[in-house]
Length: 92
Image (tube, rainbow, N blue to C red; front, side, top):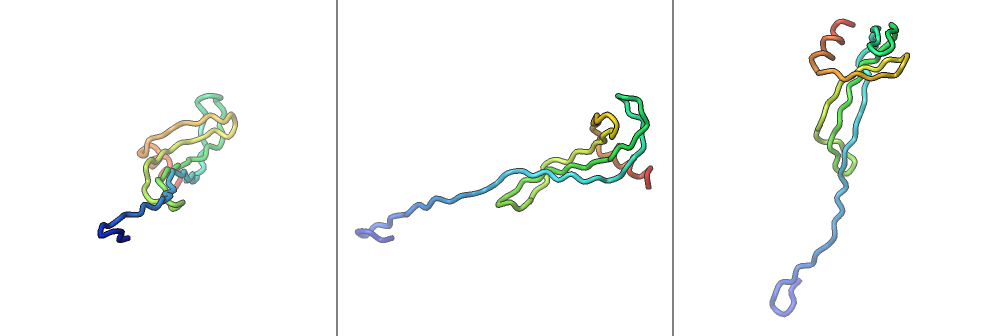
């Protein structure tokens, strides 16, 4: 806007909505012996991907985690990507 021969800038407030979202996917169902309770039970192999979101749109994957969970006692075990790939390959 031109006022008295000088340019005056008008500042407008802008809202930027950002955050993180995590999506969990079951890759396989395994039958394993639980290290905590000792029972042979089903253990779903999970992949959890956390992404940076901008205006509720997931854009950049920030973190990827793998793990299993005993369906009998509920204990969770974290796995590396290599261990998860090996377990998934064994299932078929």
